Length: 382
Image (cartoon, rainbow, N blue to C red; front, top):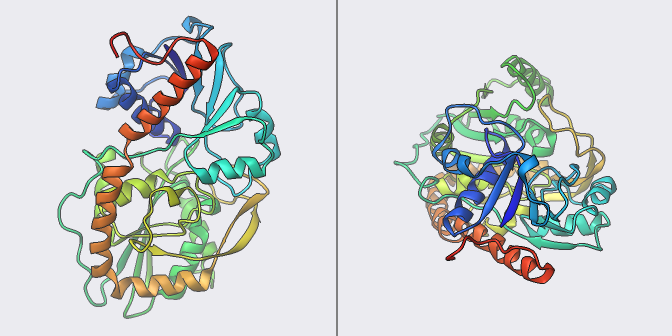
């Protein structure tokens, strides 16, 4: 038996991660007690319904068990058993304050080798750091129908889904698109933005204003159009979004894993990415359009819906001339990239799944429980 603390319900990144890996662990015989940090709100997805019977109150959590905390790295441990922090750090070097908090845990799990190195650079050198990857559900995140065509003089649709923050490279995406677009090669940018703590859709006006501020001339050029959507989306809508973009673009400057890029790749969307961070775990070379980096930079996170806890730590600096080159290349290379994206989709759906991630997690829990003399992670009979 082991405990699992953190968000499980809702559209947030940690909740999506938690419920998917937990559902796969339950399918593999996990004996788990869940302590959700947020209450569920109907309607629940099938995965959320599946996990609901395992949820208990923190007061009912046994003391002498392993407890996994899948929560942001700046959170403190909860409980009195063997404490594992399963977390992400989205910068090249973790902030020393984050490392200080993680030292309060018995061990730390991260989704990629990039994140492990980030923590070591930040000073976390006295703890076990274990890589437990993320993944996709290949039965859902898969190609659905034909890819959209891209005709002459038709706007090339570049899609992005995630936090609105310079940490995600949205500033350079806007800037680069403005420089790359022309009368014969118009570009349409479609941003599906996570609202963060915003309680209504008024954040959309702020995002639109910031897009204009990111433009070289502080106004959108004639051949660039923009769409911003801040609604909470269903996974089916998100899959359709990935399928309908000509390219899915994610220029995250310090991604621990990049789950949206992983999902988009599984769907078969041609992709444009830095792939200099955690994405290297699944982005196969030459099967996507890669944008170069040019050294590092300190980043004071800007963006109305930015998370705000990655201040003044190093991130990759995006090579903007190379981004412009890639965006101009993308139109003529579209048919070739559709074929490469299909190969990348097959790879991700076979080798980068929640089932594999769950097996990694359970194997580590079995090892730890044997070492420290606490209950194992499996139900009787498994």
